[in-house]
Image (cartoon, rainbow, N blue to C red; front, side, top):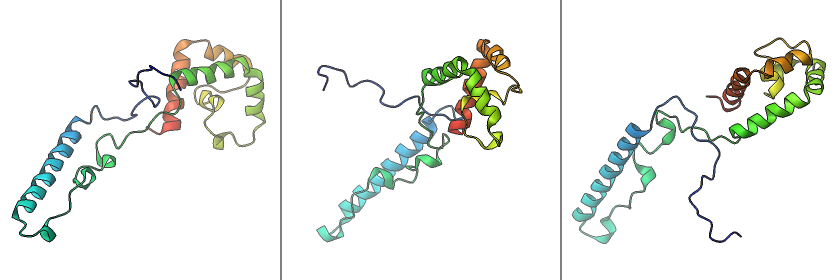
Length: 157
């Protein structure tokens, strides 16, 4: 175990992948609903005549807006693969392009394969030879497009 290491580091890769700009509005509604639930609970406790009449203590998840899947960001998704990991996969594809293209051409149903790099690259160019793929990947903008599409296909947003 490492001693003296700060705990203020990010434990998950990436962040939310969503079209919402912020959860600020949803968080405000959530906190407002929590305060309302607690206020009603306190009112119920003060009006109780006996200890048997005291209502159950509310939890944060009991608030109406506590369900994060109903928020604008739809709960978001956590990235399991960082951009550097995607770049590494792209570099491995570039290094072994002959082998990867041969396997891609050999596969019978190219449309139903999982979203590996060569399948994503095939969305941009028609793969005839390893030289075409290598030439396509030499351009930085094309690599960025492939990475963006790979992320979108694998994470769905």
